[in-house]
Image (cartoon, rainbow, N blue to C red; front, side, top):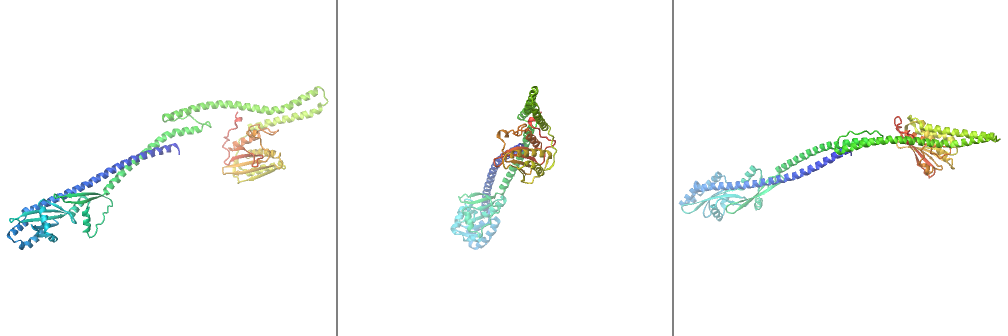
Length: 572
């Protein structure tokens, strides 16, 4: 991955992770605060219900007190007691109690006289109360409203009035908490149910259990209501957590949106920052890649201080390198000319020695009128001519090497070229076996046919010369391809190449032949290079004898106008 996307991804991930971490911590804190607020809200609802129940009890107690102090029913009962007419009028009083209960909006109403005598009750099931319970109820009523626990928790409001004869007449009303709590729960959007013993008692007296709430999760608060006499009733307030969950989801959405926006902003900023950092580095890398070819140019880079310093150092290096290259080129040209002069002088000096010796001998014989002059003249002139021909060959080969024409690529069937080279060397091979093997069908190659034949001819001639020196000599030419390049291998089983000369095979004038010029392999390698290929010595053959030369040619052919430079030794 390149630097720009790597920096953008790194900065973006760091921003996203840090934002997510802060968002998660903020979410946990907001969730805790929201949960605590919700619990306080439920507790507040519980306190409000308790206050409402107390207020209702006080209202009922005030209502019942008024009924005893100025109510017609209690006074009429008191008068009937004083006159001894209670028994006769009991039925009438009992029917009046039903209407009074409805008027007071109570669930139960009891009219009784001291001693446990019940004058009237609504509902009529209260008529079966024991006398002791009735007296106990009238006694408690004097202290205000009281609570009644059990299967039906209720608020009891009791008032009493003493008759002129000293009898106590009392009126006791009960308001069931279930109905009151149901009304309050609807108003406050909560669920109220008994708790503890009240819940168990309620279940025993309920025909079928109530269906579960559709809200699977609810927050519970236990409320306890005490009366002035010390009695208590407990109930639970349950509030659906749907509101809490909605609030938490809103918190999550807000935090997630903030994290997403922050991450996007960080990514955008990271992209711009990465581009500002990577652009000058990319320019520097591109120009640095051109240094080897000498096409690099000074940089015009704007950036941070370090980048500017790097660009300045690169420009200074280019200037120094340009100077060094010019000096090196000049030194190389001088060295190349010296090497050429030395090698040509060495190659020409060898045939000059026999020429000089032959001429000097002829002059001595002529000066002495030696009779052997005529006999030696023919031998000396033949020696001179042979050595002059050798000098001419050296000069011709050097000229060919120095003025080798650029390749003229065309579509060439390599296997057909190899068969042609084998055919023209069959006669010269004599007893040496010359074979051609095609591993995989070689495709058509763009190359200069004549120059490829020249290279193969040189390799085959060298291989035949080496194989003739051993019994059962053999030379094999093999072609193969990998889809991109074509490989031509020339293998012989001759005496091989000495290690000391193997490293200098492709240098001009390096040869192991007595009559060789040492330019054949140098010319062949230059042709391979100008075809954008390679000619190499692969070492001994598989049986450890002889040698293997390998020519590699690209299928697409040489670069346009032969962009491959000449060998270093010939850059003049």
